[in-house]
Each structure stands twice: as C-alpha cells, then as structure tokens.
Length: 238
Image (cartoon, rainbow, N blue to C red):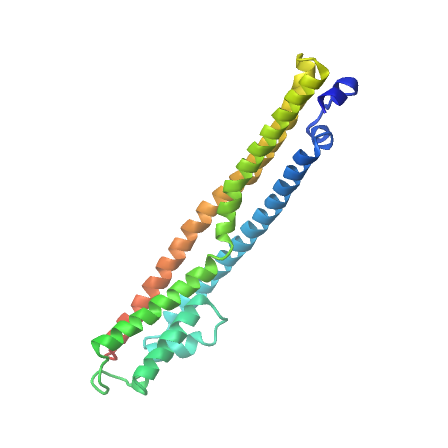
C-alpha cells in the first residue's frame, strides 16, 4: 500500500484515504457504518417510545384526577388507548376482583372481608411483576447502545493497529522511511479510530440518557402501583 502511494498520487482527503485503504480497513469501516446506522435507529426509536409514554401518562393521570373512586377510575381509563399504566391498573383490578369477587363494587368499608396479609403480599408481588414486565419492555434495545458504544472504539483501534502494521510493511518493502511514505499509512490508520469514536460517543450519551429515563419510568410505575394499593386500603377494600 505504501509503495503504491509513493509511486502514485497521495490521498488528499479523508474519502480518498478510505477508498485507497486496504480491504481489512474497508471491512472495519463498513462494520462501523452499520453500527452507526443501527445505533441511530435505536436512539430515534427509544426517544419516540419514551415521548409517547410520557404523553400517555399525562392523559392517564389527568383522567384519574377526575374520579374519586377506584371503580370509576377503572371505567374511565379503560376508554383510553393502551399504555403501561392502563395495563398495570387493569391487571391489579382484575387480580383483586379474583381474590374478592364483588368487593370492587362496594361503596364503603366493612361490607366485605378485607384481604389477608398473604393475599395483600401476593397482590404487591403481582404489581411488582407487572412493573418489571413494563420496565423490560421499555428497556428493549437499550443494551445494544451500550454494546455499540463499547465495541466501536475497539474496532477503530483494531483498524488503527492494522493500518500501522501495513505502514511498516510498506516501509520495509519500499526501503523508504521519509514522511511522504509514512504519513498516508498513519492517516489511513487513524480514519478507523475517528469513525469508531464518532459511532461510540452518541451511542454512549444516548445510553446514559435512556437508562436515566428508564429509571424514572420504573419509579413512576412503582409509585403508581403503591398508589393503587393505598387507594384500595383507603376505600376499605384491603
């Protein structure tokens, strides 16, 4: 590669460095381009999902504030589009109705036997399972951003090492070690490092932001589950 560059025109732009690079370097660059496209697809997808869930949460809790009883709230939110909050409330109410058939229709305390300690614990476990399932659903594809953010710099480093090795092999074959012979090979080697960092930086930033939003979402879901149990207790159903 270095011999060919000495005998011909030297690369003058980054694109010429890419087109004149060796096949292994081109392969690594191609993998990094694919990683970049995949990471940006996941970034846009998860941003849209979290934005949609935030709007659903605003609509859901606004509807809840218009009601005073859990039964009325359940009927109201069932008319809303499907959301993690609606699914959690539906699972909780259905499970409670199986434990105490007809208890949800009572209008005051004392008309039905409250849940036992074991039943209440099972109800809390059901809510925890529901929260975990919704969290796992929202967390889908986020670990890929961490993987891409970790692997891309290593691929860039691998390309750099291969490029430097190619440079020294060219120097040995051509018997020339001047700057004109060394510079193109070194520049070629650094292209993969630059692209690797360009792929990794937005992926890592997006991963940290999304993990933070995922934690807030899970905390909000857990708080809502506790609020449902508290509402059942306030209305004398547990």
